Length: 56
Image (tube, rainbow, N blue to C red):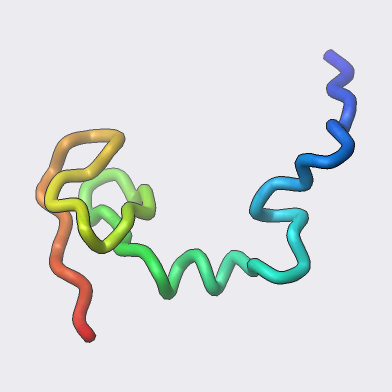
């Protein structure tokens, strides 16, 4: 399967102004499945487990 890169939509990982470490520090990791979720959510988007509150 050959996937072509879409021009004009670089995505988070290809954006020089937004690194993966920035993503990890701004979001909360689910203890059950490991998905990063926004700090405002109480439940994980993927598995529905309770997400710990982000420490400020």
